[in-house]
Every structure is written in C-alpha cells, then in structure tokens.
Length: 112
Image 1 (cartoon, rainbow, N blue to C red):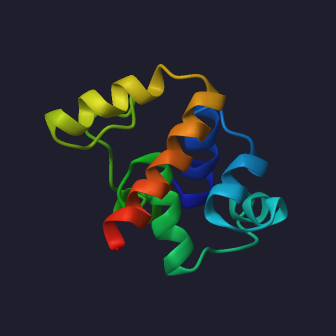
Image 2 (cartoon, rainbow, N blue to C red):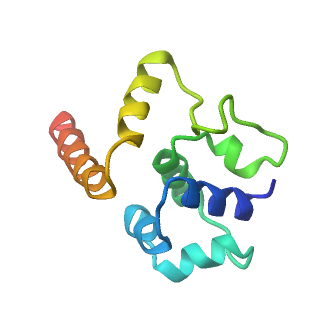
C-alpha cells in the first residue's frame, strides 16, 4: 500500500480529521489533503511527526512492502508500550488531545 493510502487509513482508523493531524504536525489541513492524494510529499521532519502521531515506523509509512506486526491495532512496540497504547486507544478524542498536551509539558520538563 502506498504512503497516501496508508496515511488516510491510519487517520481514519484513529478517528482523526485532517485538521487534527495537521495541527499535531504543524502544517495546514490542505497539506494533509495533498499527502493523501499524492500531490505532496512530507519532509523527513513531517514524516517523523506522522510516524510518531500514529505510533508506526517511518519504514511502514514509506515502504510499500513493510507491514505492521498487528495492523488491526497499529502496534509495533514492546509489551509496555502496547499496554500504554491500548489505554490511549480507549480514550475520547478530547482526552487524547489533553494527554498529548501533558506529554509535551513532560518533554519540556525533561529537556531542562
């Protein structure tokens, strides 16, 4: 499956709008639409941000032959990460957004 199709599928499976994904990786919504229609390609920085947002590898996003270990859950991580992601998937969209904001605060604190 190509990058544009994988991105659209991941976004829909995670019940995210183009606007939400765009805000998470700091681009315009039209940029996400372009990624999903093959008219645009993300930079390495944005590709990394998308992989992090969807909890997949960059290889999975760009390589047509790479598959996920558990495509139904988008999980390719260790047991501890799987437990965390499982709990994350059960949250509402608003709670997911709040959690992401809190994690950003923790990351800032750890940098200092």
